[in-house]
Image (cartoon, rainbow, N blue to C red):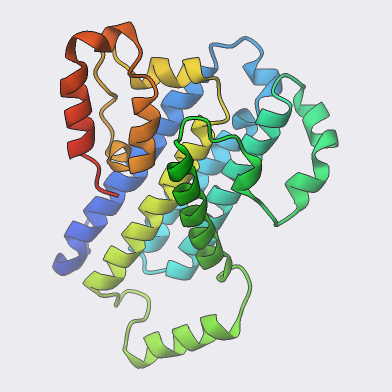
Length: 254
């Protein structure tokens, strides 16, 4: 396959690949870890949502590479909305069947309104909960503005056209801006999903046999790092806890 990526955009698109691939890996591991519960296939909404999350994340990668930024933002909005709704329903009624959940929470699932304030973000400190809800709210609002055709969206598109920033002619700054948005949205999805599955599944996933933390791009997220910190009580970590804490702090980037 011929790679026709402009040289000045190659680094940004390579980072985008890492962002998406890392999300898919952690998502897959959470799914595998949670499936150890025999009731998972009949009760957990992550099962039917999993394929949609994979499709949307993969689509975002290719849409961004092809310069289709608005379409990518619509996919990101779906990712965040679906993750929040799934978490809310699971926390409200974890052990009921899929059919029972669909009947009981039909209005929640069909409504475009979502709120993280209705979710128990028990892995996070009070300040982190506030910061996370505010960050997710800003991102949801930003991506929602691309679901419907609005005056703001039209004005922005006219400006891009006048500057020559059409499909295939994006700038380095355009790619960097998109990467930050994608990274933020996928981190919000993962943090939310972590609160939708049993803590034991997350602990077994994040903490290795030697106590070390799972190696992932997403532990550069301060929120994911705090989820990892929740499991510092584990016996496997006690012998090297200070080293683990130091590494955790050093790799926080966003």
